[in-house]
Length: 184
Image (cartoon, rainbow, N blue to C red; front, side):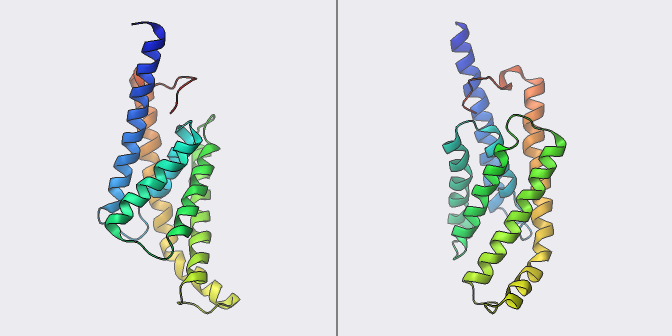
């Protein structure tokens, strides 16, 4: 086997590992869990950080969300939620070349905050639960604070699992180490 074929094979192994990790996170989304304590934010960050092809980086979390929504149900806020996860994928791009614990922590916090702000604004705008006034918007955000902590906790826990799992795989299994020309 020549060096180029070996490199291609290693890229395939790495891609399968990363896609497999994203699929496991997507499956975990449909098992019963407390409100917002889900792997989707971490999955979007992870996808943006490790999948080199930008289209695929955005597509994997969206497809995982869509597949999961077939099981958990569709709702009026889906476009807002999906847009928020696209932003989290974009935040993951910031982690691509210089992943560190501090940068990952900042990305996780930023992702949870933007999810809170965007989805609660969407709830205020598109649901009839709150008056369409500034006071109604503040009431919507206040009601959502209790869910923010679960979002943040889920993003932290699943980010540790995804990024930590990939780190360990890269460290101890040479075939999973990134290649400069790798797709993932």
